[in-house]
Length: 446
Image (cartoon, rainbow, N blue to C red; front, top):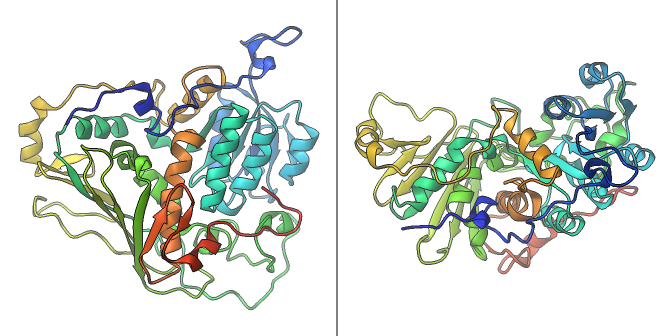
């Protein structure tokens, strides 16, 4: 089961025509412009929570020139850290007013605003770092990839683990046949419940919006509804209008390595079906089990069953796991004909030790820098003309997000969905296709 390691594989296994990077003249040192040693000018959209660390990751070597957040209190730590940066509440105003001063944009908002903010930056030719799951909808993921390719800019989705060694080891093991043909993949997470609540009704009370929050801007493209603290700042993930649920929150992280190693981007079709606790159209269900069935990808990768579990559901305990070891609240099992992998280790541990001398040596390039700086370092080098980021929008992040978000489509119907990847549509459940993309609220556009 040999797989030649090529640059195409390293970039994520999809079309690698995105093997170029647009670098603005300001960075390259074009005539009349500062030399290449000058720092990039970075604008952050969403500056609290994960946004604070994304801005901070860029700030270690670059200039932070603009910051945007709809909640000046929640973003106060980041705002105070960079007093020289201009502050905004509306990213549209920021990008319009500072278009000529900005080279790079980070987008770390709630999921429903990822695509409009990223798309505006891409259309202006800005390099873009956008948090997982990249977009709210499948259509948005496809369009961001297309625009990034058209504009020839550097892009990356915020799945830091993609730059680490573990995902590369997984690829090397699977491509070398250590596990044998892989036929099953199981991933589970303790979200929701432990981290936020789902199964909720829409609040009936309408408290006044605090003056430090611009509620209209927080809603962005989402349908109008009154302010309530149950949505902002952190519980929006469980609401259909704003988040992408447990699968959107963790799926792009947990599926990253298997998606790469098992070449799921090469699947032209797949089927997906969900069972869950039920939902009322307001929030995602309290728990769900979502089963994907992928066809064979070429001659060496057989059909694959991938099962996702959340809200307290977990995979069955593998028979190879030692009695004193627990599945834990989050985990991954990869089942091959020759060996089973549990959280990155062959089980039982005695078999891992027996097989270790014969494990393949590293063949994929490793990303320099120490975690968690790797993802930011890789991005900065790509902007300056280096190798495109592994999790760039067109080749990797977009296709990965589309598969993840297809699972959320399955939550909306009891039927098994047959999915046409190229067409972005179900071929057997046409009523589900309305959720591939939604109409935006007036004033917002992709």
